Image (cartoon, rainbow, N blue to C red):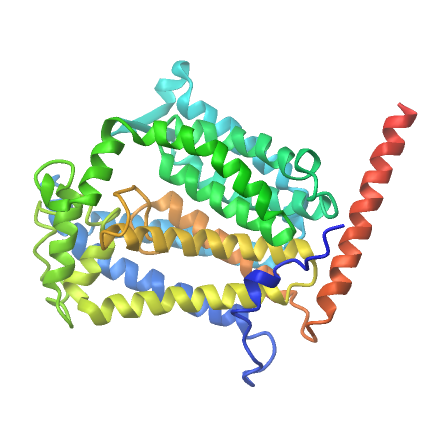
Length: 417
């Protein structure tokens, strides 16, 4: 039996003391942080997208109005998910997974081209009357499904074949179609978040290290040629090809550097005028730096840090292991999304297409992110108000017992069959 307590390595460093704000304050605080990021995102998006809309012959407010529509739908989804018992998602984990697999296959199969929308050499969108990205739904599906199975696999993680291998098979059904779109950055993000959930549940470091070594040749093959190799070269030396592969990063650094301490001011950014590609989406963080300056960047970072601390606090005080892993997965998903986007903007990672959660343009991502925040708030709503550190071991014992009963019941049904 793996005697390491789940989430110890993740939550001990972020656990907060009782600050006397009353019980049940994590959910409202999380909602307030979400609204601040969402509101700031709409303001920044308007400034970043006005010139793009004018160039396309659209109204100045086209993009921000479209995003506001997505925000309204997402807030409704947030409220609904916050009111549903979070254990419902454990029962829905398999249906959500298979729906995501089907939608992802519809994107990449050759005979479904009429149902898809391609942009910049990638097929990532389905157009079924409403255009959306199935990979965004798959992010929540992989978190929910992994958390569900990790609870049932308690006590089996010492075995690679019985512990980690079943996860790899199902993860592949989601990740391979996403890589074929192609969207390697999203696939790696999802794999990282899912692996963190399993690790927090008791997965062994040695298993992940072994599988990571096996994956290195495949990853190098993906990065060794084509546009990815050019982006890596531009990342290593942004000035080597400032008008080609390094153009996006070069212009992003110019935007950030020209913002100074307080920025050029709202609406006064210059890089959005056909210099910085995707200023409303992939490089909106650079727009924040240019118009709001270093202080604006720090403010955004602080909001995401507050989100992470609240998410980990909710995870630690969840009533059961599934709630802990679900909250941890959602928090890591949004946090890593934000960190990777910001690292690309400042030149610490090669250029990818990852959005800044709640800020970048993209209605599918926004609706799914807000729904995920609602699920996190649902976990907070059922938090154990009298939580004590020693209760964690009792919860783990209860989850182990439930897992053992499930395996015994399955073995009995198979024997009778």
